[in-house]
Length: 488
Image 1: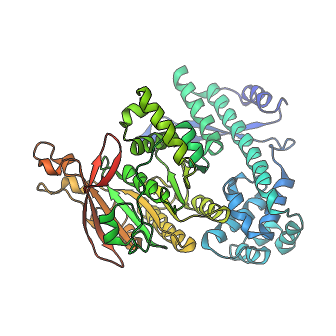
Image 2: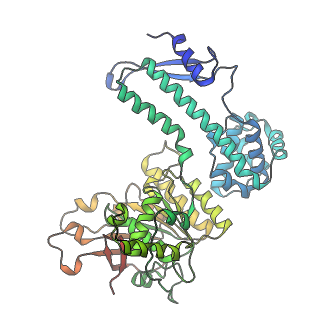
């Protein structure tokens, strides 16, 4: 066994430049399925050397949030409670986030009461310490800067700890060089993951990278009381997407969920009186979203857009279209791991800064749960309830795409149309949703037997509508362009 001091010296020199200051804790545990015992190591920071942190920035940020609750969404976009180094600060930030998520008021008195209920008020220094923090608060304009200071120090700590773990495994691991390199890259990537999260960007920025063309504007009909989908037949059935409604659009893979949602977003933002839409894509990058919008709007094959294999005339047409639509009020967020709390902060901030009329999430099952200890069904139920709460709080429709279980494909007979019972992982989706829409393409399941008139058909099945009728709308789905349009 390698002696501890042989590990400590290069590790601490690498991490801090100070020899013999830190140490490892060795923990042995039984291997999986009765396998050999495995040794895990965790780097312990030396007592004489504090990890990188900014105590003053943490206190000033907390004080600012206690003074001005409207600054909380700004902070949450950048930091999470675990970014705070001082334990007392971390507990206070967690209490602030929990109160914010519930929609409760936030100030030093309310936070103190919340901490007292948890038995944590004395741990943080009591009500006097919260009052002290208020005195250290800064104007709202400083919150984003302070949050970045706190986050950056947390990032440095995580990278240093990841490097320490890599060095430790290098001394004690029994795997080949390629495996070691892969594990090292994974640890550093995980440490930096929060830094590379996507930000909300206006459509102009996305289209500068993937120029696009939008189809003809859809003029709103007088009977539409909500936000129109852009498909007259569907809008006649729903009267548009209504304020405070949660709309679930569910389908099996390859049915065209993302394309359908993108077409709705484009239609809503390309009107003479456009609606402002936030599109959160947890599955696709902003470049992929831009490529798809380009294909939809220019009716140029998506494969050509993706590869850049275009005729000169096509490129000119795309550039012209880009200039026409670049100011559309469509905002793209491609954060790969997005919690409802973060979504709520982004949406509230966007609405406060300009305007927000609708949110689209693609897709619900990829959202980050707030409590990973819950069962998957409980996690989905929590996300569903939170999305409904967001719709009510901001008084806007929230559209959430959802994957269906394999039940439709396992169902006997030729009819594979989905049912409400097929909603994946949680019956709470059906309960919380005001509208449930299923997408179904006959051609996908019966390529040979599909009638000519059913080819390129997307059935939009309104299976549930709390305040309206149900029914089926048949639309055209031109997969090569990612375009959904009316049949007429």
